[in-house]
Image 1 (cartoon, helix red, strand yellow):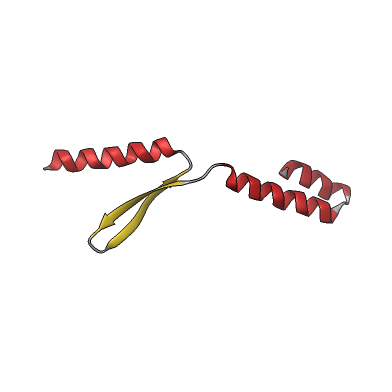
Image 2: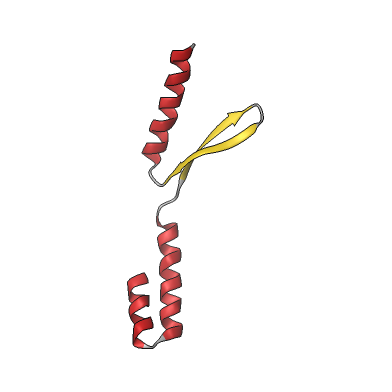
Length: 72
């Protein structure tokens, strides 16, 4: 969509090209949701990490949990 919108902009159909470019950008942004790792502390919640790959966030969470278990 974005590429088609940019081609339309270059060809002179400015309004339609802007529409397609904007619509394509919105679709791209919504295509894959982000997953966040929230750390809960005594002073409140802190977003520590964010990724579009849920497995990376899950692995990071597991690594942090293992570190706390080992420290005890």
